[in-house]
Length: 268
Length: 321
Image 1 (cartoon, each protein chain N blue to C red):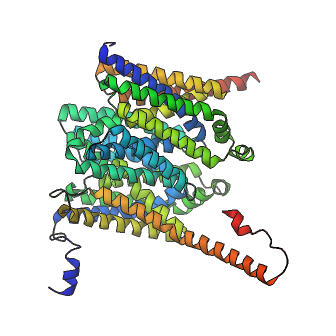
Image 2 (image 1 turned 30 degrees about the horizontal axis):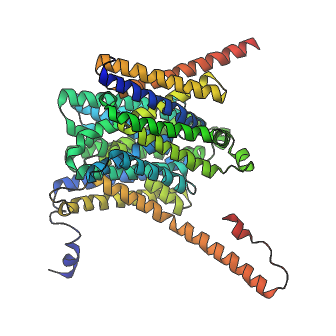
Image 3 (image 1 turned 180 degrees about the horizontal axis):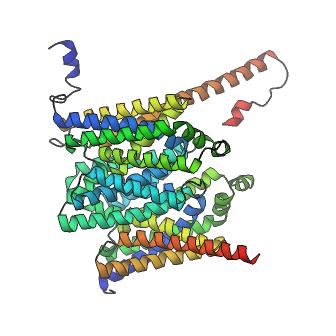
């Protein structure tokens, strides 16, 4: 389980889990689960397009996820935010379907793009992933306070001179970056499940943002490690385990929160 | 050749009207577009696009599971979508706060299941094409035997809507007033979610599981931007959806003659792009209105400045944008 190629999987998956835990914390806080779903899923078009014209997948993914994120931010300013997100998503997926059908040899890779191929990571993917992850985490660290304020209390943020539109764009850009770095190695599903499940579970255990952020990273790491171990022993896809363990950890968080409220209610 | 046919020939490739698959596609696509447009207006008003999108994605599990057990994909979509809608209702989709989260959790778990079932498909049945056809739809390969089932489910959605449209509209626009009037808001929401699950399953059959939201949201969002009254919006949305679907089918049929040759472009691509174009175009009237208003305000101010000698007041029109 810890042989050469598996070490790559463990390393990359851990990097991805840290990024997902950090970015996901703000996703859940801002209630932008839909954007977190749309940007990675839509970037699929970039990968398919890159394969069609024969350039590096990472470039296609980066361009497409950034365009999608900015499109959501810009069009969502006026009009219904969720409808715009849905439309951007399907527009990008539609392009992906076209590219895919034009380049027939690409079909088997759809599965790995959408659902991840974490066990087949080569060691030369390690360095770019780590570098992009560092940029991602650094961006969040830099924006931590204004982003937190603008996510929790947008009005107060505006009053203090933090434009919530600018923060939205910054957040979406970070999301796009996280997408570009994670999708080629783990697929769109894994990143989405991690970004939602782990922070949502973390938030039901603690109310303090700092603690929740740390806990979210820890839960994401635990989910990924458990999923890889299970996938290695059972041969079933990693995505299945990530999806179900994420949902399971959220359920556990809900049970814990309910129990705590009950106990609190009984003592007063 | 008469002038009319000379004009129409380049638009309609030969054999378009006599092709059996095209007939089936036009009937199924048309019925689905009408239903999706009508229901979509409620989805957009209730801001539940994400739920529709999530149901479509989770439907992948059903579509691929249907290959595994050997039934038509429609049944797979239907069963799984209804189960997923039930799960969302249980996790708490009815509360506006945390609703996206509930949807996201169910979506994550559902996609995990889809990964497993697609993996089993490709391992035990060697159906590699199944992935693409479930995800992106293959309307030209639907057998005409599916038509009665599609029509029946389309009618079921319409029947649900016809029964609950008044309380649903009120509880979508203002849950508090609806509750005060004694409307069982949660029950109405659950019935709506059931209709949504069926409609998304039908959309998934037409343009693919992960693109199904296009028909649901796009025409409805566009219609709500131009029509003020909900029922007018429903009619507009279903007609726009119908137009997008039929033109998409026509273009896909024609694209056989486009480069690269001997290969049709996917129907879902055209439908999605037409839907996006419709949405963007629907913003034009409001945009022109804004420009005109801004123009008149500044013109009025300029006129006042010219006639009166008093200093110009700050213009309110400029400050808004």
